[in-house]
Amino acid sequence: MLVLSMWNLIFLLFFSFSFLLFMFSMYFLNFSLSVYLSWSLFSWGSSDVHFIFLLDWVSFMFLSFVLFISGSVFYYSGEYMEGEINKSRFIFLLAGFVGSMALLILSPNLVSILLGWDGLGLVSYCLVIYYQNYKSLNAGTLTVLSNRVGDVLILLAIVYMINYGDWSFLAWMGESTSLILVGSLVLLASLTKSAQIPFSAWLPAAMAAPTPVSSLVHSSTLVTAGVYLIIRMGWVLDFWLNDLLMVLSVLTMFMAGLGACFEFDLKKIIALSTLSQLGLMMFSLSLGLVKVALFHLLMHALFKALLFMSAGCIIHGFKGWQDIRMMGNMMISLLYISSCFVISNLALSGMPFLAGFYSKDLILELSLMGELNFLSLFMLFLSTGLTVMYTFRLIYYMARRDFVLSGSVNLSDGWGVMMKATLGLTLFSVFFGALISWTTMDCLAVILPSSLKNLTLGVCILGALLGFLISCSSFNFSMFKFSFLVWFSGSMWFLPYLSSQPLVLYPMKLGSDIMKFGDMGWLEYLGGQGTSELIQTLSLKFNYLSMNSLKVFIFLIWVLIILVMFFY
Image: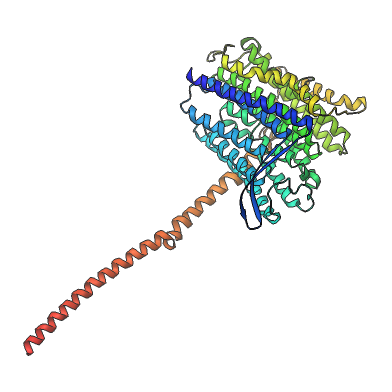
């Protein structure tokens, strides 16, 4: 009971700050205010190092969402992590995660952004390997090495910015033409953190972490850091890299949606859905829709946290089992949790008048108004149909399908703490989309012909029908069971195999060779340890020679004395 009261205290603290920050966000948005706080730390040559906070409605609103979801995750963890031994370590790691994200949100300075950016990567590694086994170690190694690529790119951008004497992107926002290199580095770094192709393999691998961590990571912290950084530095998208961003984001959406249709691991399906939605945000950023991308980022944080929490309740009841083929009939055994699961899935698929509809439908309709080629539009709507397809497939397996695994589960709807933790997110996933749309989108009107206006609805209906079709027992893929196409699609286009070789195996082998031939090789003889041993050896030999010389000298003196006495 003491542990639960501690979780309750953390939740109340986070919820209070979240409410205050949301009110500040509305106030700053209404009066178009922003506050720029700068502390001068020291001067280095011609560069002044400042510690800077940028307080505006964007940072306040996103930070309020992060704190509310983090508080719900802390409260949820009080029961989910009840039997764990290292609960204090788990609390400190989650707090470090939230603190690193808050530093990244409030900082317009590349140096302080790097502190939050690298802090997210370090804490995510510690959380992925929380369950200490070889699978978690491999997943954590892939995660941290993939994110280190982005850290190096941010470091290169900081080094280049020494030429301008200031690391704040607000100081040189108007000089986009002369800072294309910095924009390119920041954009590529964001691709690593937000797991776009070719850095997509680490996101499903990070599912080795506990489910509350996955709920926090995939909703509002780690994977959204890259998207948020591009949102804050929207000027970067004024040159040729936006075309590259569009291609990579559409391919990521298609790859993730196709892979989720062949996947049976519950957490991995939700991870692939996160990957698909991140691709949609990057696609909207490539079109210059910065505000709409932020809108979808906030809405996605709400229903994705709810989706992971409700899935965690189901996994908790199944004693850690995650295969959806062994589940089913949740609408009877878990009425409330399955309702939350269905609501979050419908919000993910863009069901009208839920939170995901207002942002997702807006992106699709604005893309129809833009100057896009047919292939990009076709891939975008095909990926949207795949999203609805695997969403309704998952709903069929979890809620409608007959129950399979019956002898070793403990299913009841009486999980008080976990149910209360999902209540606020459920309400927000239903009503908050309309609220944020009314307050931040400035009554944005989209005028399209009726055929294009109904295109999104038609694609969603077709995707839902196909999702039910491939899930029911009368239609199976037994003829394609071992085909290369299924293997290629279900394995994320072989990206995990390709990423594990150059990112994990080769760097480790190179480090082993360097240690063997360098630190334990010629450096043993020419380094400090070898020099010390050489000096000791020479001193011993010198002492030996000195002792022998002294004995010879004394012997000669005695011979001389004897000869003198004999001849005298």
